[in-house]
Length: 442
Image (cartoon, rainbow, N blue to C red):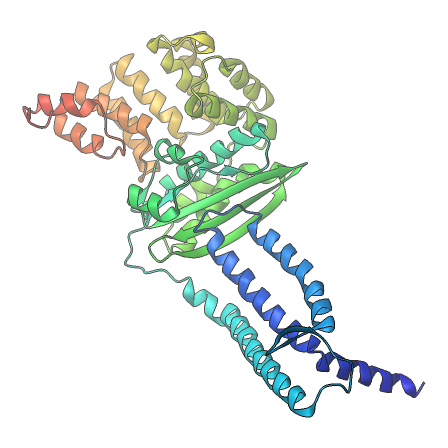
């Protein structure tokens, strides 16, 4: 028994002689630095979400290989040589090699301590934002990394819903519209390029994957101007909880950017229209196939009716039915021809009865008052109610419909100021300039 401590001591001395301990310390330091660097650049460079995991696996595999290599071989001034048996090294050779490895080990320990202190105490400070910066943000299209195209509607739906929730926060200076950001789906541009093109100070980059009955959404809130990630978080949840995720992310973004949210705004953002997951998925598919794909053959009406059947209290489903019914006058073909304007008179009152603050339903009601009832006072009131609920909106349908109303009322100056709220310009602008006799701008 007494010989065991002696053997352990001899083994420890042999580990030190072969520089195995030093190699382990230096390798661990390099691995920590590499992992920290990869975590910091994954968001800004829009690298795949699995990049940090891959790096960790590679480094973990490399660690035992480095230990084995350091046991068998030694780095000398003459190059890499097989480690000599104990007692074969001269005292001067051992001292020279030992000093070099000791210095490397001490430096490594200092680096590790510095990184730990920085992550414990310095990280929060590095993520503070300049309060003088305009609170302008673009939510990039949620990237589907699950390799299941069937999840594309959910990714588009999450993108649109996060933006719609941010529209409700008055303190934001600018929130880029879904119509604009969806053009960057699968873009290879950097976040810095996108931010410059859109004129925003902050970018939210998201990825989504679904495995079985669980999902994971990874968020990177980036300040491209300083090339830094302000906030990164992994939402690992049961799939049934995805309905409330856009509201949660919107509130988190506002907090990270130190944006004021009133009690009423927070209450509206947290309000959930349905708890029925299947009904929610159906409406997401309707929105995706129409606004993202422009598919005339998707079963829009059947899907909406099925969603209403699954949840008769789902205000958004009634509002979407009414909204699509207003498109019927455009003479759209395919499955869209099944909608009838009369459906708007049936479903929109139900949407507003369930949720008087439902913005799509308020838009439809404003259109009905304007074009059917000729009640322009009521139409103006409905438009203004929608704008008050989404003070930062840049939604093309809401603003475009209101501009049509203002043109009809002969309020061309007001129409022009609202057209300029649209990000992609508008064909109505030419007509307005002509009406204002500003032909040089028409």
